[in-house]
Length: 108
Image (cartoon, rainbow, N blue to C red; front, side):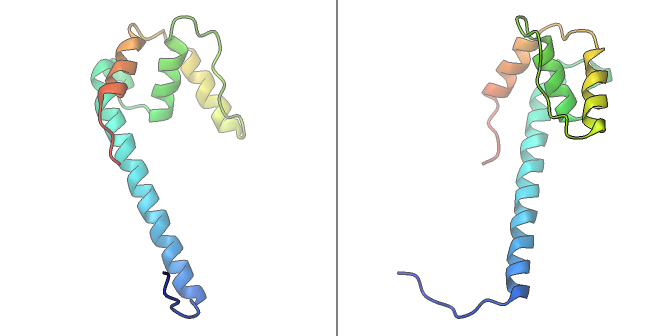
């Protein structure tokens, strides 16, 4: 049975929403850090400082049998970012990255 607490003010709703956003951002950061910790040792040192999205795009584009990768093109920056990655030489062993991600426990 749910207990009714009376009307909730706009300020309380805004506070709750801000807290939910904070928690979601924290969880997203933790997952990103865990993924990077799993895959960075498998990447050349010069690529380890790249964003996670660029690393992911590179791994997928380097996968044998993949002839195209669909990415969001909502902004010009997305297109420029993806185009730059396409000029990188293929990753030698993308399957190792897939294994590392699959075997790494991610934060819940």
